[in-house]
Structure formats: structure tokens, C-alpha cells
Length: 357
Image 1 (spheres, rainbow, N blue to C red):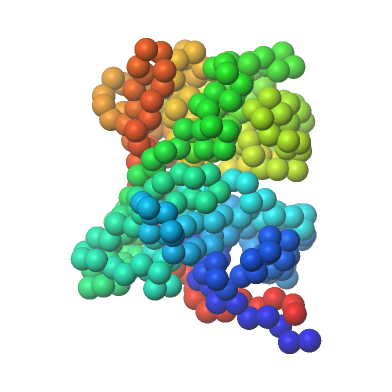
Image 2: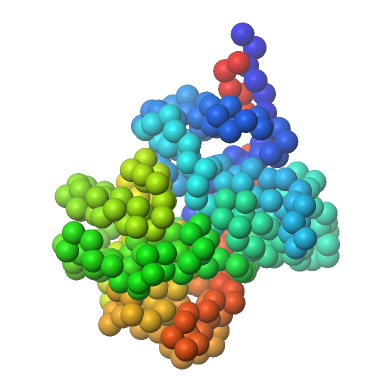
């Protein structure tokens, strides 16, 4: 049987990577779409040996782009998290690192025309409804990938991609604190269930038996830690209004500790069954909101200035991630106007991917 050939651009976006497709080139039916992505990434094998996945959750991500009919946005960004060991696809989350490549990919695909030395692209995440402005360098009418911007977790430097997130409170649940409380006690553990850019369950590292400064490898080897927090994450998911989340990557899980490298907080982010090598973009916005909102588990740990907008450095296993929070607390209520981050992206390969017919 002849293989199916599908155009795509293979890109690194932030500290993740994966194929970027034109949504029109993929099946409309979601079950057929899932089967296509499973085949493309090679899900179901620890090395993803029969596909282009990299054997890790940060390298089995997919972006699907189309022109938007939204009154504000230019591009609709549909994200899929493909599993590594299982033949499964989760369409519920979004990914801010992969989003870093959406602007460049949209220009490469001809979905957006470059304008001047820097092109602003307005993106709607169809998974969460978040609105994001991406600023991409386009001197001479082409995407520039080379520059001096550096992000921890990626070797070398590249051209900057500036992301400004808006409309991200209650991304999936419609509420900052979906349970109605800044702190919940689940199985004896205090956690904050919070939804900003991505739903998360956040606890204190020390409460879960770790320091919060461990490496990714040390955490992934700590099977007792995952066995300890996974039942809490599942119960929290139900309390946040989700159905059974045992096989869903949402809500994510995070643990916080006091900073020790001059940042605002030290954080470890779980995807949720493995440790993120750095810290997710959307997760950094959610964790940053946890730091700035009143009465959360971050109280007493975080070092946050009164500067407006507020710069936050989140220390992670590979360094730090910087996020600028234009936020305030008014009459006890947390309000977030926008959150900005600097990322980089690079086109690695373009052409066609082939999957079994």
C-alpha cells in the first residue's frame, strides 16, 4: 500500500520540538487525526522508533495552524500532545513553547505575510481560547532565525520571539481558582488548584518529601514522588470540574521551593508523568499567577517585587525562565492584563512526512 505524504515543517519552539502542519492537510475527524499523529510521531515505543518523536514528552508535540475567523486573531493554533509509550493523543492542553514557533511557521506556510523588520502575528489558541501576540523578526520579508537571544534549556543562541499572552485566566475552567479556594487540602496535602494559561495543581516541594532543587533525572527516578502526587492530581482534577484525568495531561502538576539563585521562586514542573527539563511557558504564567495571587501555597516562599509590570524569574532544572506579569490584586482579586516572555524558535527541516497508508 502506498504511504500517505503530508507536508510539514519540523521546528524547535522554545524548549520543545515537533512537526507544524497546515490544519487543512490533516483529517477533520478527530479520531482519524489522532491516528495520523500517532503514526507520524511513532507513539507506542520508548524511542518512537517508527516516527519522528524523540522519546520524550517535550519532543512529541504537534502544532496545527490555520487562518483564523476570530475578530482579533490572524492564526488559529491547535495543539496536540502525543504520548511516548502509549498510542494516545491529548487535545486538551496547549503549549507555550511550541507556540514560539507558530509565528515563524505561519509565515513559512504563507498563512501570514511578513511586514517590515518585525512582524506581529495575533494567535488564538483553539485549545484554551488564549490570545497571544507573537513578534517575529522578518528582515527582507523572510523569517530570521539567527540572533543573540539565549534561553535556558537550549544550546546556542537564536533570534528572539516575543510572546504576549492575554485572556488566560480560567483557560479551561473559567475561573482563577476552579475549586473556589486558593488552597485545598487533598489527602492531607495543601495544594493550590489554579487555572491561568494552563490548569495546574501546585504544592510545596518540602511537603512532598523533596527539596525542590533536584535535577530532572533525580526526580524521574523518584517513583515514590510520582506515586504520592498522582492520586492528588486526579482528585484535584475532579474538584476542578474535569472528568477522569487519569489518562489526561491536564491538570499539570508543579512543586515550589524558596529561590536560591536570586529568582522569585524555584519550581519543578511535571508533564505530569515525567519531569519537564525546564519549565513550560504556560506553566510559568500559571506559577507566576500563583506567586502573585493572595493566600496560595506560594505565600512565604516567593520573592516578588512591587515593580509594575512585575518581572519574575522561575528557577528550574536547566536555569531560569523569565516572565513579565502585568498584574495586580484589586480588593483581594487577582487581575492579569498580560504576561510576556522571550523565547526562540528555529526551523529544523521542511518537506513531507510519510505515514502508513
